[in-house]
Amino acid sequence: MIYGYARCSTNENMQDITRQHRELEKMGVKKENIYSEYESGTKIERVQLNKMLSIVQKGDTIACTEASRITRSIKQLLEILELAKQKRIKLILGSFVVDFTNDVDPMTLAVVQLMGVFSELERNIISERVKSGMENARAKGKQIGRRIVTLDDIPERFKEFYHLYKEKRITKEMLADFCKISYPTCLKYVKMIENNKE
Image 1 (cartoon, helix red, strand yellow):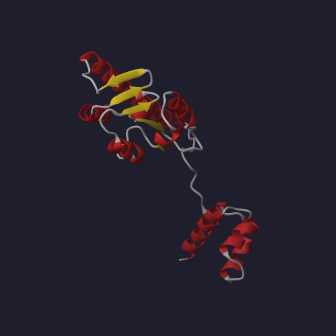
Image 2 (cartoon, helix red, strand yellow):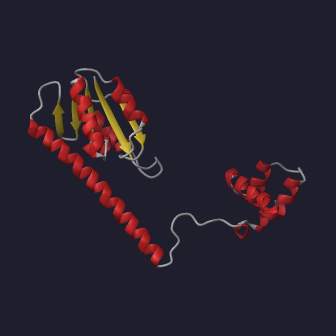
């Protein structure tokens, strides 16, 4: 049996995982055997990865589009390699194949471990660049992350209709609808106003 693993770091609104799915299918993986998730490549407890690793059996194959998809941690890569060795399975990491159904030569192992080292290094470099960019933006006085919403930011229209809600003449759903805001935003505004009155 051949299983596929696809991963993106951010959610489906930010990154599209379907390209990995298409490539895995070209590698011979059936749709129902593809395990995918949106998680950091350094996270150890990944539900879909762990699920796939728990069901593979001797002679099976695990495929991913590149080594960094399965992990960006050299420690975890070594653990996966050890599991593959114990279960005698084949790993396809993009165009690179590590076949533990037979004896693996030391050079092949060294190359895949180097792939893991570079993958982790790339992730660390990206992380450092992001931190540096954020520090630079802060130094220039720019707002980083979401701006904190205050009572002054609550629209006047909301404040006007809020008393109807407090008098139980309208529901929160109606309040959100009248003010043309989402229900979660409505709840946030209500909570802010009520907390301010305590």
